[in-house]
Each structure stands twice: as C-alpha cells, then as structure tokens.
Image (cartoon, each protein chain N blue to C red):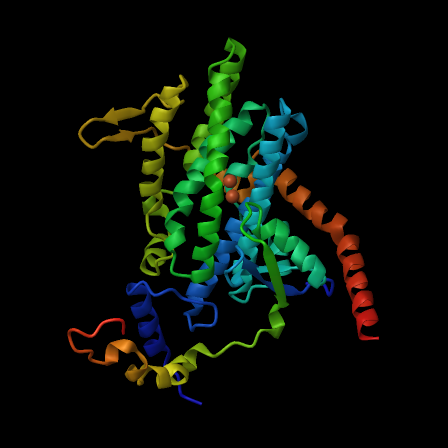
Length: 315
Length: 95
Ligand SMILES: [Fe+2]
Ligand SMILES: [Fe+2]
C-alpha cells in the first residue's frame, strides 16, 4: 500500500480541474469538494421535487386539455430532474433515503421560490417564464461543472428546460393579450414572482460564502450577481414585448453598458424565507413528508413482491 | 434509513438500432422489472431509447482509477499498433 500524501493528491486534483479534466465518482477528491457537491446537488434535487408542488396545484384546474397535458408533462420532467440529481448524489456516497429525510427534517434546503403560493392560473405562466428561466441561467454553466455525473445530469436537464420556459411565456403572452381582466392577472403574477425570481440567484457576491472556492473547483462558473444581471437583461425586453411592466421603479437601461440597473432586493424577506418563515415552507415540507409516509406500504409491498418473485425463480 | 430502501440500479439505453447500450444514470427500484419500467419514465421521456438494460449497481465491478496508469500502460507503449507508425512511400495508394 502506497503512502498517500494528501497535499500531493490535492495538488494533482486541482491540476486536473485546471486542465478541465472531469472528476468521476471513484476518483480521489478532497472531502470538502465531495461535501460541497453533496450539499449543492441534493439541494438542487430537493428544489426539483418541491418545485412540483406549486404547479401540481393547478393540473386539475388547467383552463383546457392542451394546457393540462403540457403542465402535466412539465411537472413530470421536474420529477425526472429530481431523480437524475438524487442519483448523482449517490455517486458521491450519499444515501438517497437519508438525503430525502434531511429535506423532511428541515436540515436540507431547497430553492426559496417554491415557498410562494400559486394563487392564479397566471402563476403557471410566471413560473415557467421566470422561475424556469432563472433556473436555466443557473443550470447552463453547470453543464460544464467539473464533476462528471452532475454535469451529465445538467445536460439532460437543460435540454428539457427550454420547453418549460416557452410554455410559461406562452401562457403569459396569451393572458397579456387577452381581456383586461386576463392582462391584470398576468401583471399580478409578474408582480409577485419578479423579486423572488431575482432572489433565486442567491445572496449578493459580497455575502456569498461559497462562491470563491466553488469557482476554483469549477463547480460554479459565474457569480450570483453575474447570473442575476444576465437574467434581468434578457427578461426585461421580453416583458416589454408582451406589454407587461416589471415591478421595479428603479429599473433603468444603461445604453453605455447595454445592461439594466435594478432596484434593491429585499434581502430580509429572502433570509426569512430561507429560515423557514415563507408563506408556504411548512406546507411544502409537510406535503413531501406525507408523500413519503403514505408511500411506505407501497415500497414495502414492492419489496415483498420482488422477494417472492426471486424465490420462485430460484426454486 | 429504513431496511425498505429499494436497491440501486445502473441504467443503459440503446438510443437506436445499430448503436450499443450506453450508461445514462441510475435509479432505485424493488426489482429488475420495476427498474426497467422506471427507467422508461425517468430516462426516455423524449424517445431517447428503444431498448433498456438494467444491472444492480452492487454487481458492477469497476477498475480502480488509482491503478489506471499501470492498467493501461501496455497500450501506451505499443505505438506500432497504429497505422500511423508505418511509413508508406509516395505513390502507394489504397493502403
Ligand atoms: Fe427542472
Ligand atoms: Fe423546469
């Protein structure tokens, strides 16, 4: 057995990262790298799964069969995204059930955006357009993440996300071009989801404690503020195009930089929601916990059936 | 963690006739048949496959990445296995 020198292993590891060589599950990696990835990927997986709830809320009340089929397909994709990501955490040695229990106990976090209620059909539009739009901004650079299984899962996810955003924008566009009541619904949804969507990119760079190390490890390629800016710059013209108003009186286009400057984000609200005091935190986690508890007998029965079948086969 | 957790399966998909099965990820299922059914929903929602293989993850025996250099060294040192090793004079074609 060789005597492994950790410093040397770390140096070689960073060298691989710098050369854009992917890290694969059985490769040596620093413990912090592993823990950072487990935390980030499981948080991401939880967001996909919890994210099904606010939209699932409207499946039975979609305005027509086409919208219903589309929303159903979208929510099913989110389930798939959650599953790709849980399987990526398992490649790092995390136990899937423990990971899920951490969500249920409140130990693990998920994206705060899903702690806001979906009170009207227009919210399905706002979520697809803004929330999936912001998710795409975050996820596209993750396709080049240094950890192979995460990067591969993100490639698959990103391919599927673009339909999510388009169907949401289509809903908003149609409402915005409809009756005054429909347009008001669309504007109201934009008003409620705009700021929480900007918060999806996380704290300002100055406050973000993990960014520097994650950039060095090529887990992250851009800072929170860079991605947020990119999101504002692409989304504002889309809102204008369909005749909706971004609810920010400080929003200004800077012709010199080609970028928008925007108002101050309410970080007190952000941290309150992260801490569990958002409008739906309890409801969301309760729903997930109940889903697990109510499915317990199904998992047990499936196991019993599998054992029976295996016995029959070996007999 | 409960003892009821389903085993982990590795999923391989043949995307079209003529191509080999390729690893796409993993999932949990009570048995092989359920693993195939779940793989259909998780990994082929957009016609990504026409055939699925599943194998329990614990049955995969993999080479050790720390021994990759030694394991693959014999191939590295045999450049004469490649056609570019040989000089073919000008004027010789179809070779
Ligand atoms: Fe997703
Ligand atoms: Fe999505």
